Amino acid sequence: MSFIHDDFLLETAVARRLYHEHARDLPIIDYHCHLPPADVARDRRFHNLTEIWLEGDHYKWRLMRGNGVSERFCTGEASDKEKFLAFARTVPATLRNPMYHWCHLELKRYFGIGRLLDGDSAESIWEEANARLADADMSAHGILDRFQVSVVCTTDDPVDDLAHHRAIAESGIGTRVYPTFRPDKALTVDQPEAFNAWIARLEAVSGVDCTRLDGFLDALKQRHDFFHECGGRLSDHGLEHCFAEFPTDAEAAATFDRARSGEAASEDCMTRFASYMMAYFGRLDAEKGWTKQLHLGAMRNVNSRLFKQLGPDVGGDAIGDFPQARNLVRYLDRLERDGNLPKMVFYNLNPIDNYLFASIATCFQDGETPGKIQFGSGWWFNDQIEGMTWQMNALSNVGMLSRFVGMLTDSRSFLSYCRHEYFRRLLCNIIGSDIERGLLPDDDAHIGNLVRGVCYENAAGFFGFELGAYRP
Image: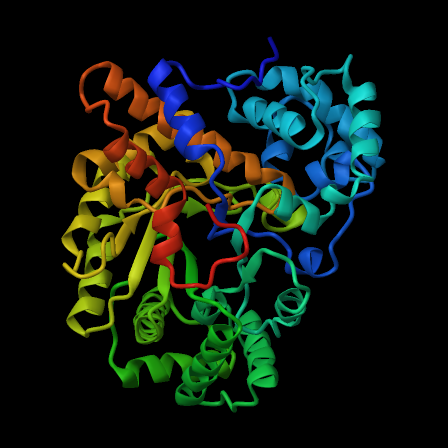
């Protein structure tokens, strides 16, 4: 039997029934990812397996470095084939790492290859997969169609002109591709050179003078409006922790003025300015009925040598141990007191804090929108069997799994749609095990609804965007 078979991860008869009857054939809503919109707009074709599988994938680079592979074969000048062969030789060393599962699932689902990847099989897999990439259903559009991806939400800077999104909308593909508003650079008054360079781009794209704070806020609102016109219904923030030390308007304006003149804000002033801006962004989202996402807890660029050599997003990030509860509660409470609490999904990177996040979410439900405040899926270092199980267990025990909006890829790769299958199999295995143990009723009317909701239907109803052509 192939390692990746029909009942992969499904340990009980009930789990197998739930997956094959309720989860397997549902479309995909990928409401948070980092796919390049340009690749979708031009219906990118990939010339070889390295382009589609290793390009930009810091998950794989981390493991290769850990296996003693030179940087030349990760991000360096080695040929595409050399890079693939180096990764193939690393794969057997990744046993029990989720990469081992993902790689073989992707080889099976995208390329029909059921052989184990290692140094011996690498040459034949390279040739077979590259030949398969020439087929029409392996272009960017072809993959989205093949995996029934109804919606993709990319991650975009407010200064982006969204030309690629407009081109995608006019292309006629069945997938709806929407921008997500990520204004993290608007907080960086402690880095005035970069802050002012970014504001110059904001002024150019908005046509609004940002000499003063009022103009800056107006320009950001204009961009928020523009994203809405282009179908955007989500914002996103990548933060170590929430900011919740709220200044007066005058204090925020003074910090802004100093940054505009080139003076770096102190840590305290930066924290207070960021808190002011996060309250403002909450208001914008609430006014339009958007969903705000908070990705909390990453300790970024911890390896200074690697950062200096290669920049961000290359595998130099780690789980942080930042205090989360006090600031998250203060931020949510401030928005609610002001009448500006939008729908929200927050993601926890440190699994120690799972129950903390799950319990906080239950405190701010409004009795009108089911699951208004969501404890999001296992993120980054946690999007694997153990991490996703821990997240769902905490959510189930403290809140309501039945209202959970489920999985997302959080990926830059078109080969990541198997992660939705992986999640669905795991969900069905968890529920199936509970039924086998007598902890849940073996009742398809109730359990089937839960599975379909978490895998697709909850997200379809929660975010408020128009769905694509792919429906159950």
